[in-house]
Length: 330
Image 1 (tube, one colour):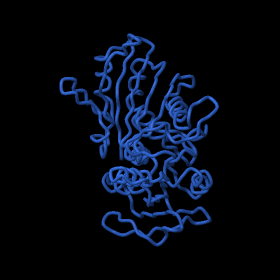
Image 2 (tube, one colour):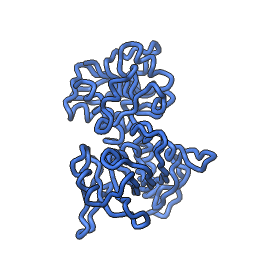
Image 3 (cartoon, one colour):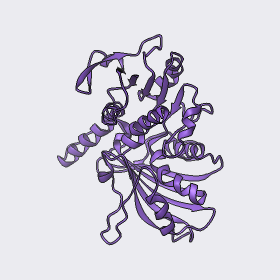
């Protein structure tokens, strides 16, 4: 199988390379594409150097499967052309998620949707994936009617530049020096702030709207009530979310725990005695999304509150994309 990675030098592209090797994805030929300034450099795959190329103007990536993570504008402009040359494009950007003809897929939740593709399959936003990994099995069991979500999103969600900025500004703060933010609008060192995406007339930012609209599409509930508040925090890797969920019938924490403990891709971390619950530090580098702090929502008896943490570069992006590719091969 011929596989191409578009955006091979970015954080998600690098994770894709590692996962394709780690999971023994059937790659016979690998092509790596990135911006013209990266052309001629190399990435390593299965112990060999692969030379990075700039995207060809004719759109032929010489691939059966394309993993795209080079940015929404590039994907929007070129994904259909890549697909027209015979490739299935698994897109990690926001470009195609809400397109009615493009399936939006989390393999543990709606794998069959991938088979209805017309050349492009969209990978959901990282915060959507991490939240729905717990909400979807609960929805299947009890029928979700409403959820409020507060996210605590790592800087690596903004790519390598976000990671570098946290390091640079934290070092400067500790040394008493003044450094200006570049990747974000505000200093991320010892600080947190509303997610750095545009705010609409309704007061919700783009990230919050993604979580709402993508969840509705994936779960197939067009009027699902979800309200999100998305916050950037000074954590390198792995997003966390505090979720309060209501269902069509009363649900107690034990019933919810039973469902979540058998759900694919989840790991229960819920030690009340030891005060040990999901943390981004422990979620980083893991395939599973961690879920815990399960309790009744004190403000809404019969509803539950819980906390999740998941590696947004891995399950929130690259791993989910590779799993989509694996599902197509089955």
